[in-house]
Image (cartoon, rainbow, N blue to C red):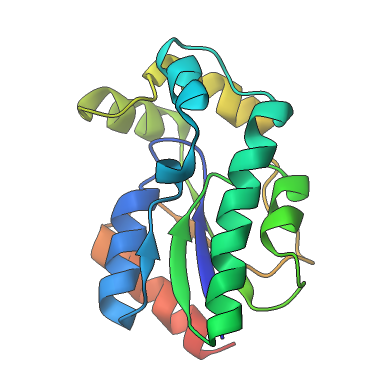
Length: 166
């Protein structure tokens, strides 16, 4: 069984790509941000970056969902920024069955996307702290890096092709 963790900084398209992968593959989808406690959302809305202490309980909730998929013998797709290797280790507790879909792009593209969206709690001013925190997945991590300067449909196809060749 495989759980895809669609990861990257805010504005990279995690939700759009995650939903697209879920639809294409027929796998359950979870918007990881929905598991943030209200205090985290309030902090981000006010423009304050989350600390590791803020993130650990949230990451554990996502990891629990991943474990539930594994235990049920189900595949799944979840979004999570997963900015640091230490965060990804929490999400991939078993060391098997998780693949990180790393969405990355130019800062200007990310900023433009963040400014254009409405109804999201993460202000564009938070992008700098996310980029500073980001540790791209290493060659030893189960990751599919995908550039965001293409359409969501092309990204989904690229991920599906990479999955079938694994």
